[in-house]
Length: 601
Image 1 (tube, rainbow, N blue to C red):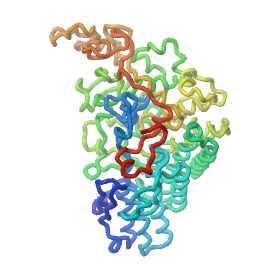
Image 2 (spheres, helix red, strand yellow):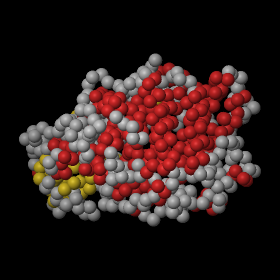
Image 3 (cartoon, rainbow, N blue to C red):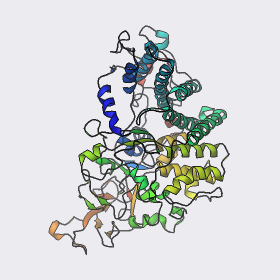
Image 4 (cartoon, one colour):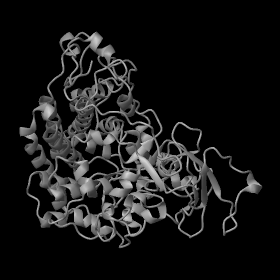
């Protein structure tokens, strides 16, 4: 089955537009433009309504580690958390997120879908889809606010009890989330078109959230819910195992460890791919992918040295055990590493074709250094061609079987039941794809990884966390992982970039010939004819180096040497306050029952 069957879907779904009021849900409750008297009569009606609830991300996932503020990437933009950490935030300044129109649209469907003259099985399927979306809606709210009002019906404008209700406790809301997920898992059809929600999609999202909630409760003592963490971890393990045992999915591989991983993220057709549980399908000219050249870099985000140093050596040993790892230059950082590094970061010898954000032009890749950027560039998810048709046609793998394996491994380890057979069925399958040595239960402890997570004593769990970071790097998982693990303090460390031992000439593409020259920021870059030419007859690229705050072209930690600096100060992560957000002040003013928690005002 090819993805072009979705042409009909996109054409049909465009006919149905659900009106949403711009005013807030808790301020005003408009009637939807769909009249229940003349709609909800057939399976086609229900399908059209449900399709318009689809709001899955696209190619933006590949920049999310930067925009969410994580240790995987630097970001030059004013992101919410970065702003919080460097200011004195309050409910008057943190104003996003408290919107409820989508919930009303979902609940409106649930109150009216039963009118359709279709079988009970079909009704249950559509109820499952709507409840899946409601669960997803409340997952986002709980992650942001913890305690939130729960509504499972459309609220009328004269229902003051509902309009002015207080927050419901997290435990109650999460129980409702899990009930909705379970109904979805039990009733959504197992066999649906590629790109559509089916039983396995619902099961994977439920497993993901069960792992999130279980670990969040375990590592956040401020909730006082540690005693219930195990039940969620058990649920995550059970769901992941059910998906594994179904035999429907497997890791994508052609036997080429140097490229199979990369191909997953630049494919023009993921339908039928055995690893993809849910893909966001793109069709050139009808539903373009949105794949942007900014993924590569030179816009706002850039990969960090900290992430690069987390990748293992090709023999499975810790990179951070290498002599002088802190002062390795760019070419040396890529010698004998986990092949996923070369399929995520632009590496020495990479040939750049697509150059919209890269003023140095195409050809053999030489970093374009600039203020506040790490100097590393990203190729995971970056479609390195110039043909618009190919770029627009690129699918996005939103749910991968790889994540299911990692959910099972982590939940099992957190429950204290992990053995070698678990590792062989999960982490080691991921490593087999890229030709990496297996993880064993007698793995040693990496001191750097231990320092990241000082509350973890199990070296195997530490390595599972590493494997998750590497396998899912630059897919938008890292922020949630740091939040649920209670590792927000890691965000205080400023992301760094390439290391330069001093001023002078450097080879950055690995051909043994210098490409750039660093000069002191007090000097002037010579004009074209006066620039020094390298052994290949190419003029060197000049950069003025200096400390942050100067007019240098690239910032180094020691001025004339050191690591490339991206931001002067990441600020302070206030624990536990910054794991949550305040209800915007305007809404608390309207409804005083919405009190703030965790120190917010």
